[in-house]
Image (cartoon, rainbow over all chains, first blue to last red):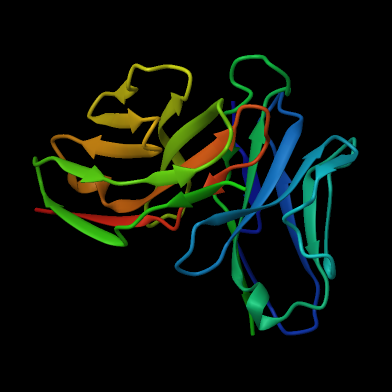
Length: 118
Length: 114
């Protein structure tokens, strides 16, 4: 069973360009979470999605950032008109079905995408 | 709001020795989970150990164990028989039982010295 896949692993963009980060959850997982790690800091929650639904986007900046998790295909975190402050590692995590079932609280992390904005 | 504090930015330990990493948290929740994650130079986040707040018994995983003091809101990680591969950033994390997101501390950089 493959783990959480993220691509690209490294992404370089110039200011004003768009960045698209992809996340394929573990097989059987329908819940995806995105976190951002700025240099020298811990991970900060951005958004939680289920298939075709955004459940909690309280940690995501209101402008330029968007996320989706379509019925088919990976989850996408999209950053429009990137600025230097967007340079960070972006981690995706997935978990099994939500609810009171055991294991719900365990999230499995991908290897991250390191975004560098020049 | 939930906050997690790791007051030790850096620590070092001799190989084969024991080291304890500190973590405190603040929450008004009564039911929650606590975790320690390891982030080696590869930057992958690896689950080390987790604790369910309603369980009084401290969790253990091989050389890793926790000292969970619920009243003091303290959750320290003890690494016994330290190995070179333990060199990494260690993050303490909190999750509400009914929640979906982690709240991470700022991390402790641990170096195991040969």
